[in-house]
Amino acid sequence: MTIDSYAFQGKKAIVRVDFNVPLDENGHITDDTRIRGAVPTLKKILNDGGALIIMSHMGKPKGKVNAKLSLQQIVPAVSQALGVPVQFAPDCAKAADQAAALKSGEVLLLENLRFYPEEEGKPVGIEKTDPAYDEAKKAMKTAQKEFAKTLASYADCYVNDAFGTAHRKHASTAVIADYFDKDNKMLGYLMEKEVQAVENVLSNIRRPFTAIMGGSKVSTKIGIITNLLNKVDNLIICGGMTYTFMKAMGGTIGTSLCEDEQLQLALDIMEQARQKGINLILASDTVAADRFAEDANTQICPANAIPDGWMGMDIGPDSRERFAKVIEEAKTILWNGPAGVFEMDKFAKGSEAIAQSIAKATANGAYSLIGGGDSVACINKLHLADQVSYISTGGGALLEAIEGKELPGVAAIKG
Image 1 (cartoon, rainbow, N blue to C red):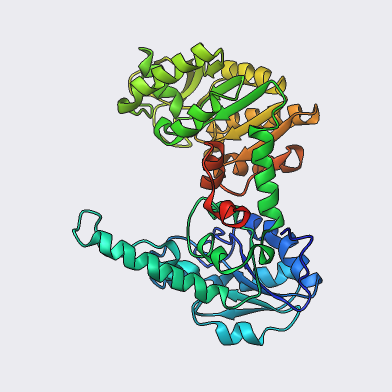
Image 2 (tube, rainbow, N blue to C red):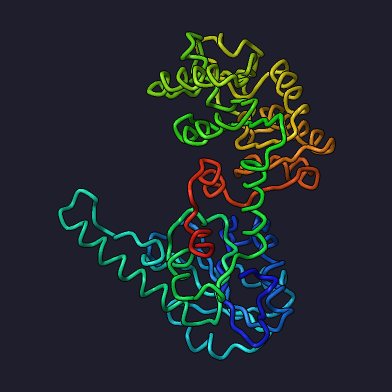
């Protein structure tokens, strides 16, 4: 079933969204991208004459009620985005009466799903090494099904529009789908677009295909890098990962970030790329700083010859030019992770150069997919969001999809 072919008139729809938005210390939203992303799906249901029950998590309350992570704080923002008053259910598992009373065109937002440990389905307060853990895990799986069944009982149909949590087999993202037949469960617009974007990058490839992998650790990106080595023509590795590669090749990296236990892995990746004929590109120069601070002293030095006491914080001007040339010639582009300590303006030039090159390539007809919090923040900061093909809302979900893993949230609906 698709959202466009379903008749919502007179029906109650329970929709899983990702409203895990960043809040400041006063509970005000600092970035409403995720709320805006869900609006087309939510408005489609309302405009078709359906009633809307919205559910989401926020933060990591670990199965306990935490006022700082209450979704009540975002009720005004959701009301404004939808243009209708939004009712609030202070307990997501005890909202049957409020759900039953909903009329066509009305909206109910449930409290944070993760206030219940059953949402994530992990035993609380017991270590994996405890002999009783397996029994506790089994009991929690049963409780998770009951929790999902309760949520499902509020509505006639289920829509999953939370790509950001599609890689989790949680009560609200996957288990709940078991309580609806195939004609009453579907992906929302955002999910459909995300699934299509991954498909474009991994299956409908136009060449050359260039992937830019940034971030601090090789260990967290190894699955993606390995999968991409079977698909890309060019792989640019940047960010903190750079220095693990430099050290593995015998370079000196000062006090730069490095995973010493991954040095052999870095060499293996380079050898795999060589054997497959893939152009693996690393930084040639680095903006090094004498300390991790915005006002640190800096110098440009070779990426494999950073002086003692100095740390690599961004790619240098030569690397920016080399990366730009490869990116601008690409026809399919994937970017995940910044080129440097992007949070400090002084060390954001590398990430900015990558973003501008991607925008230029996109204008020349390339398909570009941007995913991962920092890459997205960079594109937004430079006001280039409308100059790339697609910006993914899902960090972990996008990465797992790129790794080639099946996403439980998608599989639960598509079968």
